[in-house]
Structures are given as C-alpha cells and as structure tokens.
Length: 234
Image (cartoon, rainbow, N blue to C red; front, side):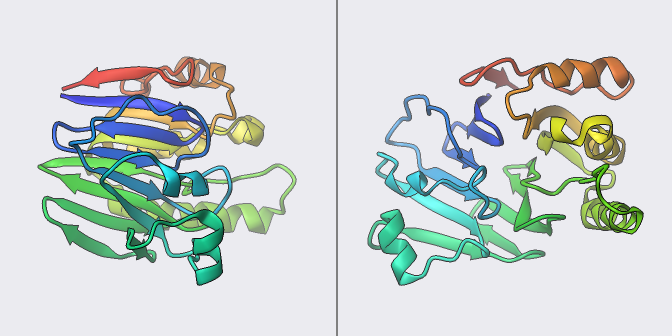
C-alpha cells in the first residue's frame, strides 16, 4: 500500500511501508508522521514555490535531504535556513544517478531551474517533474517557444515507454491555451498508473478541463480538489 497526500502546489508526501518521501514542499500542512519511519525530503530547485527552508526545521527524528545542486548551502545560507548540524544532504546535478540502498535516484535536466527526479524503489518507479515542463508562453518569441519545445522533448525522452507507478507533473493555468502541452505529451510518452497534476496555483478545476479535453489520455489522471487530500494506492 502507498499513501499519497497532496500538501500544496507541487508538494506531495508519499508514504511507503518503510519510509516517507516529501517532494517540493512550499506550503501546506503535513499529516502526522511516524517517528520510526525515515523521511526523505526532495527539492527539485531553488524557486520559492518548490523550496522552503522550513524543511530543515521539520520535527522528525530521521530526515535526509536530496536537493538540486542549484540550492546552494553556503555557510551563511546554512545558518540562515537553520540547517541542523550534521544533516544528511545529497546535492545532485542534472543527469546524475545515485543508489541509496533499495532507492535509485536519477535526475533529468529541467526546462527551467534544477532537476526532475526519476526514482526506482523496490521495483516501483516514481517521477516528480519539478519545473521540467513544456513552458510555451503567448508573449514569447516564436524562436523561444520552438527552442522550449525541443528542449522539453529532449530532456523528457528517457521516460519514453517507461512504466511509472506514480507521476507528478505540471499543469499550469498561467499558460492559458498552452496549459496542456507538457502533460499531454508526457501521457503519450510514458505509461503511468497514477498521474497527479501539480503547479496548479490552486486552480483545481483545470484538471477537469484537461480531462474533458483529453478523455483518451485522462484515465490515470487524479482529480485534486484541496490541500491535505490523500489516496491509498496499491
């Protein structure tokens, strides 16, 4: 059994029988956590809506951090953020793979800042996009948007045909008519069981708009309605 809890924006908590994973905490309230289970905290990049220094002050006895290398923890920043002495912190660049016991962490480049995470754990695969998305904008030049498309498709290519048990990917209302480009492409590229749209800026109705516009792709897309919502998945 896996429990997924929507914390807020791009933040999700994934509870396994043996440990917790917290992705891109920005705001919202965590549910009670068992102190006997380790907590792995992931931050895909330094933007304030994906990285909150409050992660270093979580009241949990066993926290480990897996951060994008663009989150620079200088001595001054460590003091400012309240990083605990001796904290276990792993900083990863794009296109890195590390093995942490049964967990394999692979990073993909982002079309914005930092990385996306592709994780393999006990035979299950989990993808958290961070800000890896097809960021087309009506106000940008044609060359910018063409370059964005090319980079997005190149960076996400390692997911082609991959079976993803859990997938967290952007669906951003600020893109207006182009909001679905990234998610629809990803759903055609990979084979996902459960897809959690994120980066919604609280516009949860956009998920239903997507489901109505792309019924052939929307089977695995999860409807999110509020912070703190949880799902128990097999």
